[in-house]
Image 1 (cartoon, rainbow, N blue to C red):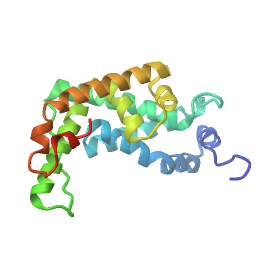
Image 2: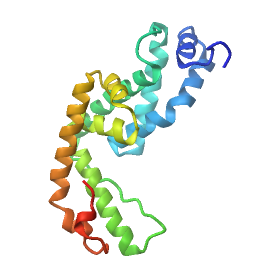
Image 3: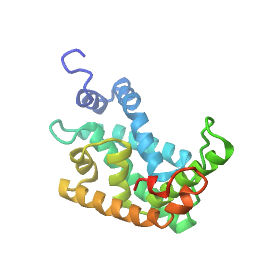
Length: 198
């Protein structure tokens, strides 16, 4: 880096002045994480791509208003992506019932093991999908995107205590949903039902 020219903040300032190259660097730098969090929230590749694209379009449109010293660019991008995901989920709920998450096979397992792993994964994904939006966002940011509670709070626009409360409620809800299916999900795996960590 030359004197901070390649920091997110410097790139955003340049993008705000119409520098497409600077905007492109921000897109390359953050696309994978924004796509990943969007995909975790939506469970649909095309919808996650749409959210990712719209997130960066909004960055381009709002870059001129960016002021250093506020939230980090990455935090702002997460917040925009989360809001777009919520809008997408609301629209999806109005239009049609949610579809089950697709099964992803592990080529290193036998067919019966792949089926059991797929059923467990689908059960966990369905349980996460059934959480209220804010709880799902907190779980996604903290567990899948490995954000700290502070970063998640900034992205969600809530206090750290609120994030901790959302996480606690989400963990309790997931435990209740999955405990009822523990024996069924562990059946035929050669593992004791108590090995399904909740």
